[in-house]
Length: 312
Image (cartoon, rainbow, N blue to C red; front, side, top):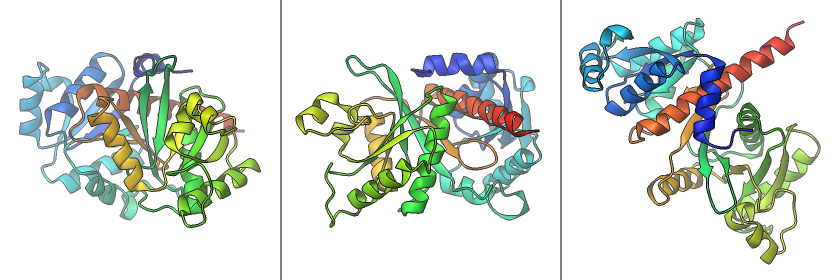
């Protein structure tokens, strides 16, 4: 089981490089991350954007522009569309967001004949390292980036996507906590009602390979002591691997709190498209983007293994 980002990067390097299309890499963070990933044998980079700017930033990063495939496209929407076309054709394995906004990227790659849709709901899964006393593991949160106010059916898909990420990290039976502001069902608080329903539905095997329970407040989902004090009894209580948020706002605020108050790096992947889509924030440091690339490599490797198992 992968317990930290360093281990995740090592495992991804061992899996072998995947081809990563970087969309509009017009800021130093994505340039530095893909350059480092290429040096480590983690990725092969295809940089799609303003050639002159990309070459300038590569030189500033101490890299030779001749060592990278660069596709000159100054319009960000067309750059995203080109990346989608290459992914659909199997020419690239992963898409990495550069200086383009998430909404603009998704709009460009999910429309028309080049769409990377699969029929599955897409959702964002963010990972961080939990290093509290006595704890060394990766925790996932979803969905803070794509689905604004998911209903029950959509939340089941969000759980399924997050569990797929956990399995790619070697967590065989991840513990999934459905979060609310309180741990008791209150009819006037929709998220508690949804959590109870989701736990019941999943108890019948709707999402295999995991244990789902809720509602939980954040404290008793991650702290055994808080769960004990509040008498919350569940195999998930105090030990959650995956935190399912009530809505996008809660997930986004929680994620940014981890970054700006706790100093955490977040790795991000959108699951449910034809290829992993990495949507690190434009303000994320290269280390966070490198972790996202490693995650994308592991997700690609896991998908290929599943495809191989399904073939007769």
